[in-house]
Image (cartoon, rainbow, N blue to C red; front, side, top):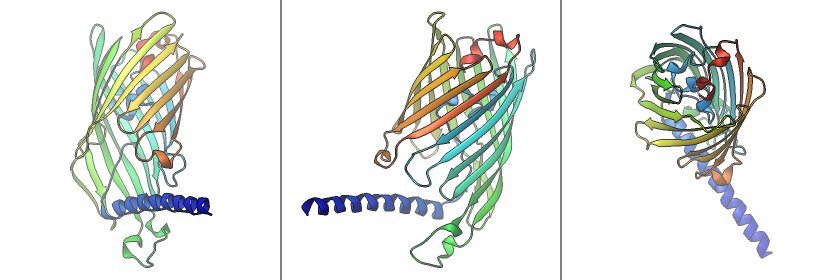
Length: 319
């Protein structure tokens, strides 16, 4: 009897926590304005175009990459993000370009966007400096009318939100055969839409990404690539991703990341053919959401239309 009472109390406590999380999330959604958000992936270091338009064409070949991320398994309405990108730079050209289509779902919110990328590189003897721009549009939708509320007829949940907003970004990339450094602001416009479908641009978004990595060629068998990403957002503490990836015979890649205050990440990559690469990442949550989810799964598929010339370019293979 006592055991049953304790079990019921624990269940009630657990359900109470869930209700409070949902309540706080809904409170934030209702009272705040909607702004564009950049989709983020754990395997970003293998395709930096997601955070820096200056990376467009860096691999000097037609490159198609798709990413799918299912976050916080076990929490209803948790983020689900999918992305398909293409970029290219003609041989002996300094101009790169590309395009990305993405969809980001979070509860009753859904964002679908398309971005175009342009980059121009200044080559040096053993390095290059690249500048990039991005621009596009996104469709932001929120289905308030589909929510079940404790009080019927609440006007705050009566009207859905559906609007199209502009996006723009800027980035710089400096790279050599052994290391690279990147600074970007992928969401320059602070574009917003409120519950009345009124749209506005209220200045800079103040999201900045600084990342860098080094390639240690230990032997013909092993290559190590440590990297770090710093994310700075106005009004929030700095967040870091510390990464270590190891490539074995340029076929199998094993990686580990630590995202401050959020997750530990394990990664596995395999170069099935010179053109086809498959990657998987698992995020183990260490934040306050840890008791409520079973981690995050992320899948990456890349296909490159290689030629004999660009197969000899070794350094872009690792970033």
